[in-house]
Length: 115
Image (tube, rainbow, N blue to C red; front, side):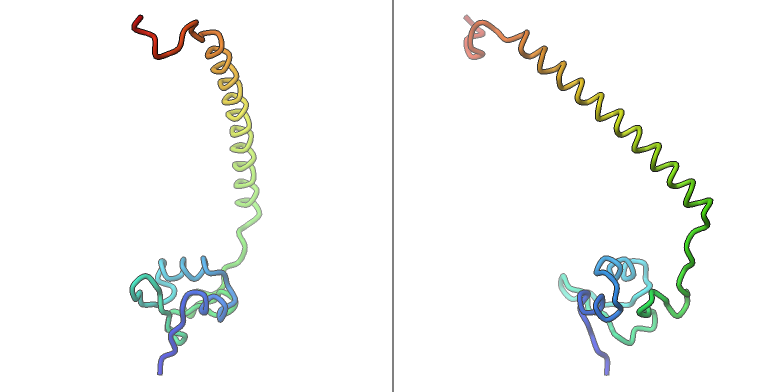
């Protein structure tokens, strides 16, 4: 007899996060049935991932080579520098906008523009 589990139960059973179970369902690594808005996963699923993240067809992946990790870290550092620059530009624009709004304040209320 099949033992059906929810996403939370499956995550606890395989000792992984709920998001990992959702990704495995989406990628077809884990078989499940959606009933209403809930997923039911067969514990004895042929594509079920083992507790260490292994699947019958796909053993646990080794970490990426150091060169790729270094490239990605350099890219992250570059993007963080760009983000810091853009944040400074946005702050400067906000200050200029506030200064312009103060200098352009009319002498009469906005609703009296037709008089």
